[in-house]
Image 1 (cartoon, rainbow, N blue to C red):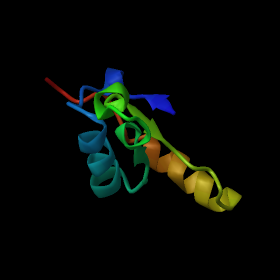
Image 2 (cartoon, one colour; image 1 turned 60 degrees about the horizontal axis):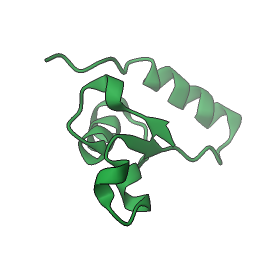
Image 3 (spheres, rainbow, N blue to C red; image 1 turned 90 degrees about the horizontal axis):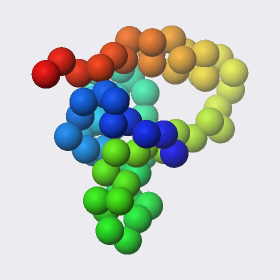
Image 4 (cartoon, rainbow, N blue to C red; image 1 turned 180 degrees about the horizontal axis):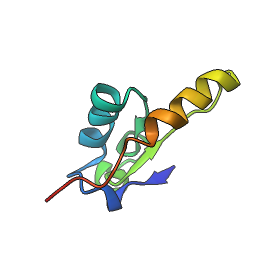
Length: 70
């Protein structure tokens, strides 16, 4: 699980939607792992069960991610 609070998104679902659509990397919203979704609203989970080339490409794409303005 990764804390996403520093990126300025309202919640984990908004962040993961942005990751997929704008960055091209998928993650699972942290709220889906908690009985009370609010407890995971600023966390996401990445799964790293890929080939090295896929992980290298994901790392390259994640470099485009920066703190959201506002």
